[in-house]
Length: 145
Image (cartoon, rainbow, N blue to C red; front, top):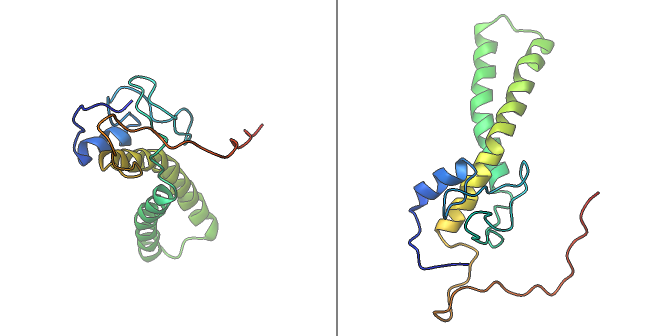
């Protein structure tokens, strides 16, 4: 359902994706569940299938969490008198997991929106009639129980 409406710039699209909104209309939700992307925007019908974030959000999340947590660990080690292992586990495990769970869907939304804004994953138009997705020639994967 691609139209000739102008696309927002990459930063505006990433901002919408960060908040889990459709990069086209800003109204529909990108995700049906925690990290499960909708096939299309429920509000405007924009197809989201061609835009696959793959492993990029996980890499960015690990990078950011590592750069936040490791300096804090080193600061506590230097500042304190070598805290015990249970104190480290009580502090850094929940912080790392919580920060990763907070950032991962937001980064995934921003990456998908950036791909949408840059038209990545969508072949150039051969004619002026619009984009039609390629036909799949394999059976759909079975859904998990």
